[in-house]
Image (cartoon, rainbow, N blue to C red; front, side):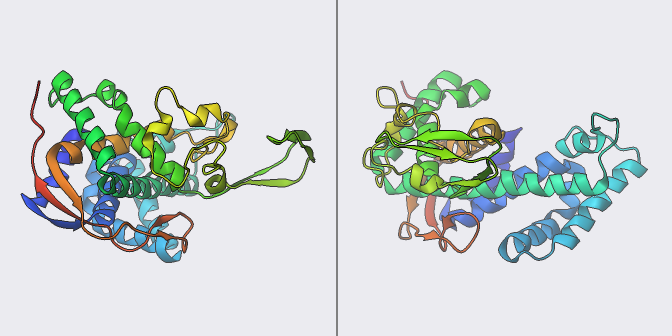
Length: 321
């Protein structure tokens, strides 16, 4: 279904042209997330208005009430018509707490908005940074294309979950983009019991219960004693023989946080972005036309500043031997 969806979306690009990659990926991931969470029948009817309201919510914090009212109406329509769909929204509507209480409309709507923000916004940013780095680095782009050729030889055009799992090079490219541009630059946690931290120099510090600690992800993912040349985009640092993140310890790489509160959508995020960039690499020759984007720090997530202009020409990787 996902492959067909991507083919349908990118068909509008035509044979060649130029696009703002960030804008295109933003719209694409909104369509994917909305379809997965809200359901295809209703989604087709509200898509334009919903996207407008959601973007305004992200950009200036407004329209939360209007967005909530729209989603509440969808929930009520499903209940009134006894309509049952196979999607996340339906699962939330049908969910019950351990004491038997059903979820309320407000809880369902709040969770859907949270899921949309977590699943769409961060993936848009990571997809864009991945593309910008790939198109600015000829060696990485060549490696990613060669991997796609190998995948095609094995699977043809019938890519499935196993095919995406074998895209290690593309996985490392995404992972490296996340290391340099983590969507959340910091994480905070409340301390529930005393514990001791030992630094790499052997110094020990006791952290008291009740304190709030902050983990600066952006700083931690660029420590030079863990990541060689941290300012350089180098996906190979995660490959066999180096695995710098593992050598540095289980909390050396935390764009998805870590421990019991690690993001449960990590695998889904990688799969989603792999599907998008696998399709783009296989079907288009791409060139970064604008300067490599600077980082915008004006929002909660570290997104590319301004447009990311990319020219494209339609092609299809051959089944080479």
